[in-house]
Image (cartoon, rainbow, N blue to C red; front, side, top):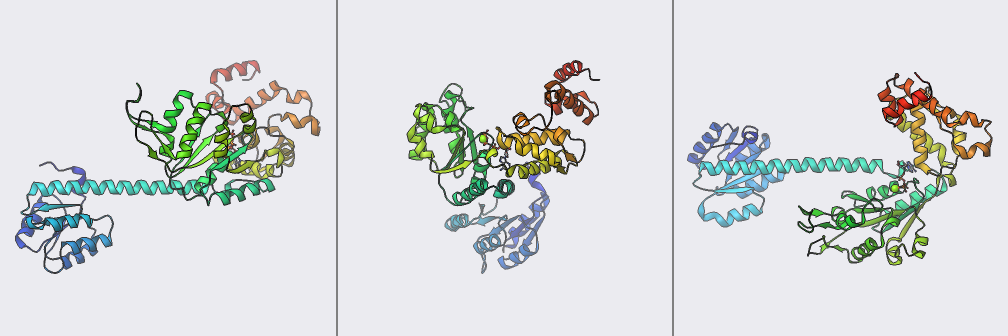
Length: 463
Ligand SMILES: Nc1ncnc2c1ncn2[C@@H]1O[C@H](COP(=O)(O)OP(=O)(O)OP(=O)(O)O)[C@@H](O)[C@H]1O
Ligand SMILES: [Mg+2]
């Protein structure tokens, strides 16, 4: 008979039976098969052995005087959730055997024991046990990831002490304790996605998925299948059943990003599923109940889109329940130094560079700047500055020209100092020095192709 090598030798077995003959033949057989087996002559003795040893599977007789197989089952299961119990039962005991299965036995075999049946049962049980362990490991990993996300997207990671950001954090704190629909508004790069994550990972839904759907990126014809999934054979390419985002987000949060870009046709379908809290896969008959929290976001002037008949008013009222507005960075300038330092630490950690501060002049430039790209733009500036700056401190020259405040604040720099060619040459030289003049690395640092780098080297007479 074939024995699964994965299972063969790593299982500790405990056999409990009061019949001497069974014991001898069974235990001998299992030992010959290579299993480590311990044997007990009654339930009480079995429990004693179980407590002192690391037993994976208990094979116990059901009918024993005093402490019977059911008692053994309940007791060992009480000690360990991973142990599995196989019951041996005589023909007349079927009802009890069924009761035992209900009480958590993994299998039963009928006496007189056929050895191949016993082995098959052991293999089944071991496989089941392995699966259970894998599932537990998976759960644990998932919990770790969730915990990590929770930490990463906790409120203290939303940087800013300005009144506007404090208000936003307060609103998040309130709304994440509820199950209300959230609508996040604000210019591009203000941190809308960060808010959505803080809401989800701070809510009771955090152990379930947060599914983000960017409504801009989805092709009209794919959207329905993307949102609701499809049944096998629903259309030519539907070789397999596929779940949609709504279903994947079950129990969790569905984040509809850039909702202002959703087509009217898609909006109509979305409205139905939001109203009925039910979806139907494309090509499917069955209505599936969907429990998801909806968080949506836009940087568009949605009221104007409604006036222009580009956005449905009814869906607007469905989504626009609890509104959180992320103010533009230029309206909360006191947050700029905090954010700049936050990103400085982040990128010096990530790049391994010992950049520890920002000079006063450099900070002045940043706070004077209008940041139409908001926090994202500041983040990118800081990443670049940390990579380029040679010393421990970020200086004004580590930033590209930030045009809008030059005239405004008269930093005394001439147009020539900021000429694009000058700056390009400067950056390329810095990048080359940084990577010891390795062109491939320099190109990747600059985010351009090697060919493009070589072209620029020629243009600037470098190298
Ligand atoms: N207050 C903040 N603290 C720390 N990081 C922030 C903050 N606000 C934004 N960020 C970071 O800035 C980047 C842009 O933020 P996010 O993607 O959330 O913006 P968004 O409003 O969704 O932009 P878009 O409208 O373009 O999608 C992200 O990397 C985010 O982590
Ligand atoms: Mg976004």
